[in-house]
Length: 337
Image 1 (cartoon, rainbow, N blue to C red):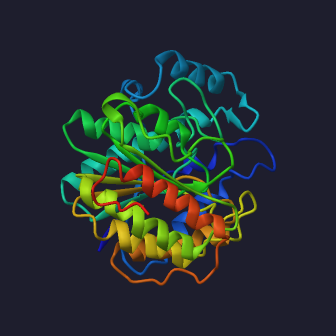
Image 2 (image 1 turned 90 degrees about the vertical axis):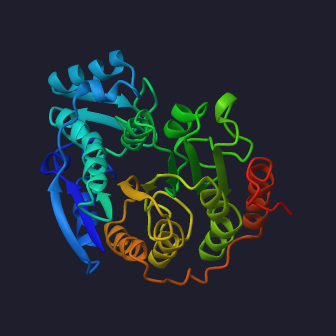
């Protein structure tokens, strides 16, 4: 398998302030993880996106406010998120990486792409930064694909629910599936959030209580995530690949191990018949990021992993059952009860 690895040195210069967990070392850790995979890897610079290509996802007034904030030297955007002068280029390259990867995979230049970029994106709303995120990188790529007539599924395995991505596509037929800790930041992602209007059924949330690990991952994927993805059969699978569900992560309370990410990648990405792009989201322990990214990329190539044998709390199975009950109303491959 051939892997395209997109990043750029500008992503190392973006800063949320001293001591912030969303820091430059995360990018270096993710890049090391891809390089350690043993696969054929080609590294490419993430290009700067044209501002107009962000408009389908973000309010032009909001985009301009980010540019002005960076031009003035930077400021805080919310209690968790800030920009500095270099953040404008970093954010535009983080968003541009997805469009570049789409073009490359369409031309058959690789089998998958991994985007080691920051700032991350899945909390970014239409007109507001949130949760370390400026522009919603995965949503920008998905919007470009749907505009060209392709069907898109977004799989989000970050420990935090991708409220921004869900909100942007809530009334569309972009499939959004999220595995996340619940209750937890940002407070969204319950099983009854299913989409609205033309998007009803295209949002699938699988919340997991704190302490959930490998056995919950297997149950959630086999009973909900895989059946929905198989039935939908998208042209493109975009993965919001956060690694803050790892047991070593300092900001959350799931108990995934690196092999759990490898197992999910093999079970879901390697069996996807379309094209796949992975977008780095969260993950704040650098050793865990490196190990988990290596397992992910190998899993994408078809290497088999066993989920960790961590025993999850009893509430995990009940939450997954509730998610299956909701999904079964819209997806025939999901069996409730």
